[in-house]
Image (tube, rainbow, N blue to C red; front, side, top):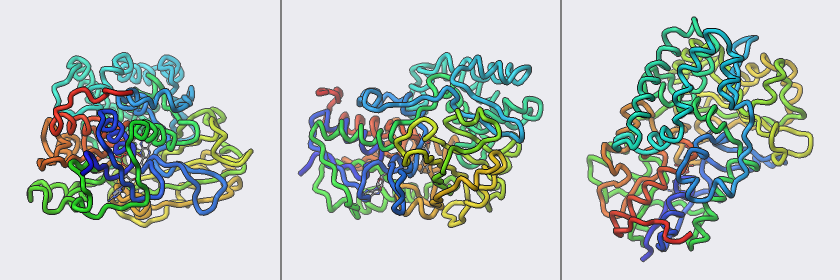
Length: 477
Ligand SMILES: Cc1cc2nc3c(=O)[nH]c(=O)nc-3n(C[C@H](O)[C@H](O)[C@H](O)COP(=O)(O)OP(=O)(O)OC[C@H]3O[C@@H](n4cnc5c(N)ncnc54)[C@H](O)[C@@H]3O)c2cc1C
């Protein structure tokens, strides 16, 4: 009988495996795909000579994460941090979010600069406390209550800036709305405003890092930590039911729906039904381009940005995001990552890769290549002539690549206020599935989506404490 089986080798599964292995347990990881990393994988597609981030590309939460710090990822991975974290193309105007908040405020200028500074400066100053608070379950008694108070007030300010007074502070509102739109759904609620604020604050605290070699470098560093302490990883193995596994404890790095299915007969009917009916955010359609040269942006400053947002004013971004939940939008909000501006390891010499995605209805098989290409072309005339390869991954295909991305939803279930705290149930120990030895540790559990590994880290620690009475997980290094 093995001590711990982990189903899924995404960042959370690997972080969980590393914690359990460092505590001295016998850990076996089972991954359905042939390679590890889940939605943090980097690989070739369709025989291309370039490699692509299949999911995550830019990793602010990895820098903020206690799991990544304590599991050695910060030391193992070469995080490239562009000076210009992100830029937002409004029309012929652009707004820039530099790592340096002061420079950002100065370049925004006037009332826009003041509004942006007022919103973000207090959070940037308190970023460590904020990260600790938000990368833990929201129901936990906060270790930084004053920071949480500042954050709550700022979230109200953010909602006002994005939805009420965006025409007065057009550039500041556009910058911020782009961050809020990373959280799919275009919701006007406080959770969306808060998530956007946190993301914007990280842009000015430590920046938005790009791992050299791609997101795979993060998964590989976590796997190295786990295997160095004896964990074994089995790829190409899809678990169909937990009864197949002779394991005392099982950690699910899967969707909530799949965890319920895999543990049929072991969970209470109530929890199983709730997990099977997880509310979902919209899906995404992702397009990878290989280019013969960098994107020929009209505004040359855009070439220095790690991430470019395209989608117009805050009002236009909100409208596009709301449309994405229902029927899709001909002018969607677009997130573009251009890693080869900073890392030439991804494509043959002289060539470039970019990754661009927009939200679409859940489980849609709509191909947004034309719309995405047209939007980039508007900000970069001549773009189409630079394209050598195009690889489209629609929402449906995202789930085929990784069953945790149900319907192409990147977030493991809706991240509105309710979805953030009932994940999958209201509890101070939300990872525990109320059945001996069973824990949900993926992005479907707190603290939710992004490559921070905190679901796995905290879920595994909860398992060690409850099942083994182990409080010191890091006995070995
Ligand atoms: C297109 C896209 C863009 C993104 N962009 C970013 C970004 O820029 N920055 C960022 O921080 N985050 C980003 N994210 C989100 C981030 O990648 C995820 O939140 C994160 O990977 C979640 O980690 P996880 O370990 O919970 O799950 P996953 O990474 O999804 O891994 C789950 C793993 O479990 C495996 N699995 C599932 N069921 C079984 C089974 N029955 N048997 C065996 N194995 C199984 C899957 O194959 C998969 O490998 C993006 C995601 C996508 C898809």
